[in-house]
Image 1 (cartoon, helix red, strand yellow):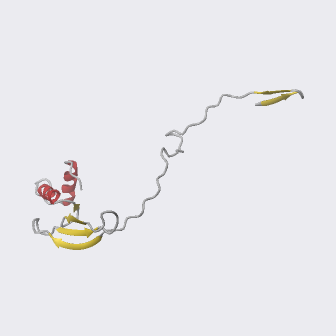
Image 2 (tube, one colour):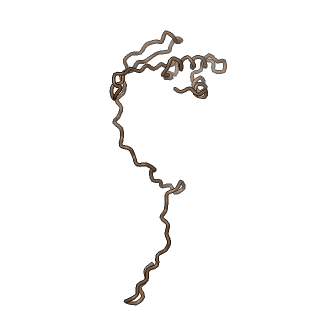
Image 3 (cartoon, one colour):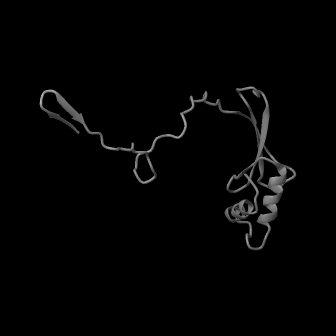
Length: 125
């Protein structure tokens, strides 16, 4: 507040004001970190082959992909897919664990239920 009293006397009175800081309830928020520059978009891997897996029950397929960019371009990755839901697995061991769960009486071949149990038991897809 500023007041002028006469021509030769000016008084200024400042109020104690603390700056507002954003909080969870205010609705507005500021980023806690600076945004990163966007990465170069990934080039999709190229499908090289699709084959049945002889070591697994009928219907399981393996797909091989070739990486097309980056430091590991040219490297091939193989993924295994379940027969009905085409659930993707990265290893033969994961497939065998999943097949064991499918055989349990409480699951009775239901891939959706088997997937839930597979994840609950700490396995990753």
